[in-house]
Length: 182
Image (cartoon, rainbow, N blue to C red; front, side, top):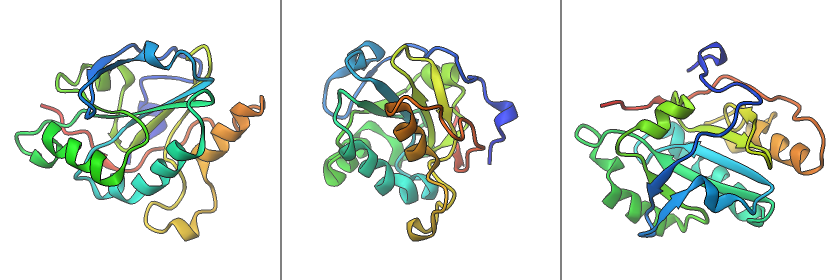
């Protein structure tokens, strides 16, 4: 678990730029999402049990909102020498098998993960239209059992922001596997 006192980005900070290769064979940048009201950037990976447990809920969010409302991107920063399941080849396989509705990007240099201060996988960051941070934290309060979720923090943040209301819980701790740094 990573405590919010350790987070690099704070509420109101501007989203760091990026330009990374995706599993779709294209390069993607922050500017690609300029037509979206909100932008969700999630640092995740293939191998982590926490990322796998929350994956279905993140896919649901990606499918629920049209791109003009919510742009979404998932970024895998893990080193692959010791974690080969996080290689681009395996990312491509997973994105195809799970039919990811958003770009899944590879951060080989880990520069983007460092700029955002990604602590664990998954680590979501939600930005408003001016790309200022309005939420970061765990997707909800029960990674193990979706039927027992009482606080869907990320969904509540998206809904509130789209309705022009303040985000009810802008920051929570994050739970997951630590980012696998080189």
